[in-house]
Image (cartoon, rainbow, N blue to C red):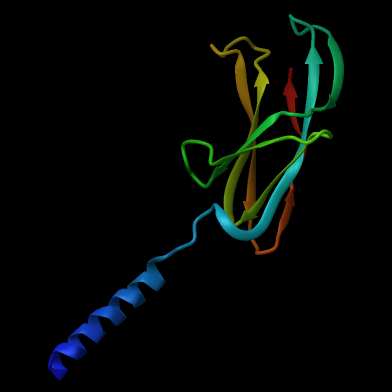
Length: 137
C-alpha cells in the first residue's frame, strides 16, 4: 500500500468511528443507573363488584414496564410478598408501568384492563418511587 492509500483508509476508519460515536443515542431501557419502584394494592370485590371484601398489597402480581414508545412491554416483574416491585438499571427517559385489573365496567372482552402510571427518569442514579397501582381482583 502506498501513502495515499493508507491516508484514505485512515480517513474512512476515523469517519466511521466518529459517526458511530455521535449517532448512538441512548434511548429508554436498560444500561443505566436509575430505578423505578412501587407497590401493587389490591381491592378484592365479590363477583358483581358490589361489596369490597378485602384490601391488601398484592404478592405474586405481574407488573410490566414499557420503554419509551414501544408497543409491547419490555420487561416484567412479579411482586414481592409485600406488593413491591422494582425495575433497575434504567437510563433517562419515559416509561410506562402497568398491572392488569379486573374490568368493573364490563367493557373489556377479556375482563381485564391495564392500570398504568407514566414515569420519567431525568437524571442518572435516580430512584423514582411510583404511587400505588390499585387493581381489582
